[in-house]
Image (cartoon, rainbow, N blue to C red):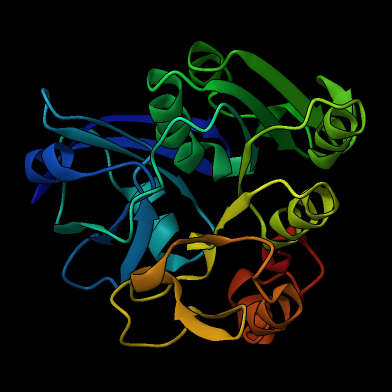
Length: 280
């Protein structure tokens, strides 16, 4: 059992939960995730560890309410309630070293998994430049937390409601075209965003990593749902990742596989397949 100690809504569809999980908080490293079973009648789902406090024995998860289980957790659980089971930490930790200048690129709730990685890089003495993107300013989350561990914070919105009007790749490309080539780039967010980041950095020869946690299902390598081609090898995101060389990921194959259940998702969401729910 993991008691919920804090709950807050970051947007109408995104909820932040801080729960008691002392063993996980003591062992987890940046880039890892947990498997969550809300109650005995729920399915297990993978959720990224957005923050942790080993001393307090807590972990923080950011959850987007898009399916039955995530809606159940976000809407039906309150402070003081207990989540049935949390298993972790799982997955391979992020590569940790002093690269020099590191650019963290995140879209939407991708800010949550980016935060502990960026924080660790900052504490190791790297120069951290964070680019946060969203369709509107309301979808930019953890801005103050990211600013506290970044040497430079750049905001982009599709509609121009905050920061630069455009996409996260715009300031990244401008940076490199002006000769300010970073030593390392980390991208976490929707598949199409990470693919475009990879396409942006590849011509400049900048080492780039993408976290593919968004395609995980059972989190243990048993279902095969998170298969991804990296170079000429088949990898399982939950066991071999979730982070991979973004320049080696077969993005076309990944995008096709991510749309396998669009029809079923459309029925579930009741949107007929014409809204952002079933897009990448």
